Length: 339
Image (cartoon, rainbow, N blue to C red; front, side):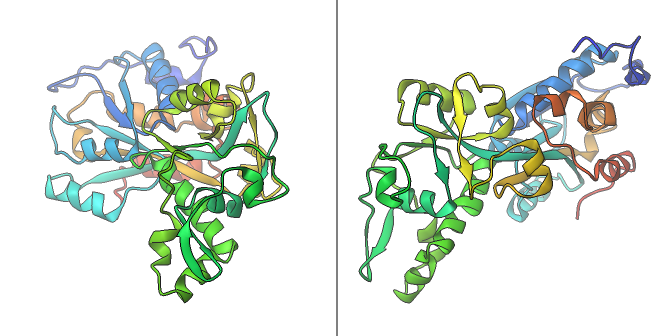
């Protein structure tokens, strides 16, 4: 990170005095554990290259961060919520009820969701259908809905290793879980024909497709990716759901599976070839821009070409740069509000 100094970077133009009157002078951020490492990198560089205090960055998950964001306006509420998914209409309604009516949505780039296991264990080539068949709480067998009794990955696909099914998946407060449910479990339910079979039985396919096992084969992780990594470290059969950047920074311990025969990488995510990718966001409370010194400066610093563009520190860590970054920069400069 030494290249990012006032003497060597154009970002030094942000080294201005934080003198605006406010109840507090430190930007406060909370939310997605996927966005956390990116936000931490930006916060440290921002503190080093400007006269503003280093922002406080907390995790907790996308849903938890947006819940705090929507608690109200003022010094006792956070300024920014990081999210690995878009804010929901229901969350915007909660925000509005608390007086948070003007929100700026900022897309920072893209990340992939990957499936990784201990580097010394068997290799996997998955499809979404494999994950649905392995983790669904109930499956249709001979025209009847029955509990899922698969114990090995080879039980759901004979081409997979005969390894015990032990999946560590994000808890429901994480944005990654919602993307996992939609792009993997729901897709697998559809691809395998299970959705049609459930509908033929008069069952609620939408609900049953994403209802996961509770018999210990699917373990929900409420903490961040480091907890998932620790679980795999103590169980060689474990396969965890991670963000691509976390995996790429732990390749000494983990190996990654393919999905639909595509290896996850910044290149395959940028091209759209890898099927399980998503945009990453943060949300800014517009009412706080005039209250908290450095808030807009931090937001603009985050999505500057030097930081979020190709060859910047976020790309170095694993973020896939947004090809429409210039539009994001313009919208933020204009303080364009989301609908």
